[in-house]
Amino acid sequence: MTFAYVSVEEAIKRGGLRMVVVGGVPSPWGEAAKGILHIKGVEWVAVRLDYASEPLKTWAGHRSGPVAIYEDERPRPGWAEILLLAERLAPTPSLLPADPAERALVFGLAHEICGEAGLGWSRRLQLVHTGLQNAGGFPDRVAKYLGKKYGYSPAAGAAAGPRVAELVGMLVARLKSQRAAGSRTYVGRSPTAVDVYSATFTAMFGPLPPDQCAMDADTRAAFEMRDAQTEAALDPILFEHRDMMYAEHLELPLSL
Image (cartoon, rainbow, N blue to C red; front, side, top):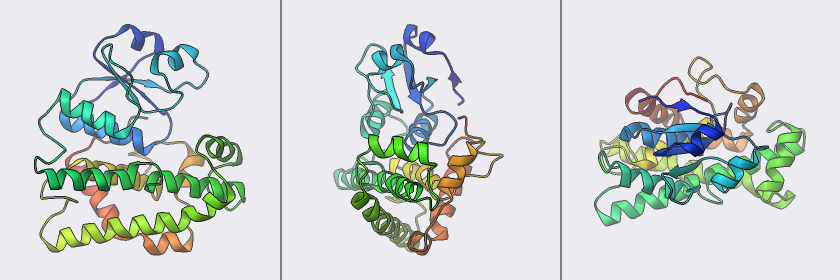
């Protein structure tokens, strides 16, 4: 299922599900939300984030993306809120296990990927830190903006690299353990939300090729930056899992 981009004005007038997304780059939070809706077959329209649009800020309540807005309900900016909304709108196929222990495991792993101080958050700070040191990462203007928005400090930046390596190592170990048990997914034997998050957040270490992901060139270069510690933590199994998810469950090419 594909989706259409509409203007801010049209989105505000529409009913149903609308979602504000970052344009031009495969923001992993946004791509994960798109992937969840794709798997579930939920109809929706996209609005590219316009930082200068006051009507968008007033309507969505946030100057960031993704933000999902269903009918006249409150805006939902968080990864967990968007997942739970999608589960309500389309209970089947579920991306959350019925078993409470497995459901808790899915939410725990998902937080370590998507949440504050998680993989995406820490990788972003790592790229801000290297960008501000002129050692790769985000361009200076982008690094300064993101650093201010997400609480960058030199100490937080220096700690981000080890945290990234730690979390990547945990995900690699989980996939290898599951593969040894005969499963290609993080929990159980069928895809859950964790598999979607892992597939989309892997872009922060190696985006899909240009024919599948026509993204901003500076951001591609930043995402491809890997120091020795990050390189050592990465394992081909992460990219094999990503490729499996896009081949069998997610939509290509990306629509940014």
